[in-house]
Length: 113
Length: 111
Image (cartoon, rainbow over all chains, first blue to last red; front, side, top):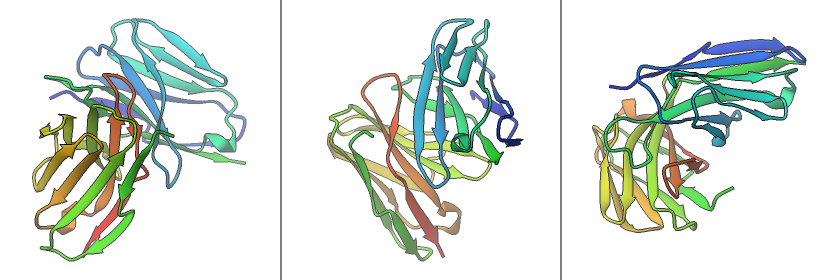
């Protein structure tokens, strides 16, 4: 079945450093979504990318969708302690979709002040 | 946040007992999903619903059943809880094939 892999699993940074998490799918995706989950919280939708090669920015966050639509990345510039959490990518699951998503394992980001 | 609640928020139960988790939404969204979250596994889909009385299995459905008799409620039942079902359970809703809105989660411990 479809697999969505995310690396790294953990990332520790000093406040002010940059951070990147990578997402790779075993199949071509029609779109990819990113979610953030704060410690003890629930996942919150960040963004959806649809077009090949698409780049979107949200303040210090930059999201990219690969040309082949099989990979994506999230880059955070100058991390802050508020960026702490787990970042998940998710792509449409195979078969009849009904909006089903396959999530990556997530990257747990720790920011040291 | 979307109008989505889960109950109970925490539950401790014993192996072999039935457990029902409830997801309630006030958004009138068509699609509803149950996930479990375990360390190192991300979010895994248990069951989902694409309308009242329309449900189907996700990737980790063994040992779980669901029901949706009203648009706003999606119930997840563990017929006979096992220790391997100790997890955090999230319900999510979606109006269409796009972003999902998650509930606050239920932490279930099976002793």
